[in-house]
Image (tube, rainbow, N blue to C red):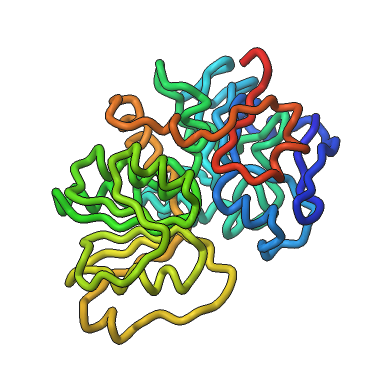
Length: 336
């Protein structure tokens, strides 16, 4: 089979690899049918990652089940499934607590799309081995478009987690979104659908701002501190100075969720945060626990994640098209 491999800045190529095989009766082999780059993949492709190439890329996809072990009961060959980005067993103490990104049955940080915690391949591959099929794979609900939901492995479900639980606890909250990619746009759509009274989306890209306005958000090119302006802030830029501005906009006891991968150091206004009373969470997401709820919202018709898909591109064009700067391209297998 082929796996798309990141080899240098703005350069990926197909490389041959052995076809994956089942290693236990709990496993499955899947074939991605609609795959998309995560926002952090854009940073990797731009040369800002912290892992030296080469490595197989990709950790967001909807796939078709090709083969299952005898003990697998949740999915069957032919099913369309969401493949979560992190490897998890589903039965250890952390997995049972919903901390699937911290599974103790596999090496620390085991994931698709980067050789962290072992080499698990990437979801821009012709075939992928899923070691804990019942725990990991989530059937795609009937009627949901695989292209629209290609990001449910990470960014769509992460966006749900960044804002939905907080809006449930604070109905009608004011939401600030400071972003550069798909995560922030998904948050705008979800926040509006779940009853946020006010959503401000900040992004220098005019096309992104147009999309945010289509989701009912007010927009700005840059952020000026708005003291006590928002109950919830979501930062997804990877820039510490933007995170600093976001927390300065929070109301007393406000919540800031940072989904940015901060590869560079920086400073936060800790005294301001102390005086206001700020809860800041900076974390990679245990997404498997949130995928069902995020898919349920997508199926409700209250949101439209398909709007964020910027391009639909043939699978064979991955090496040429992936390094180009698109918001959220989805690569699809012909015939699927």
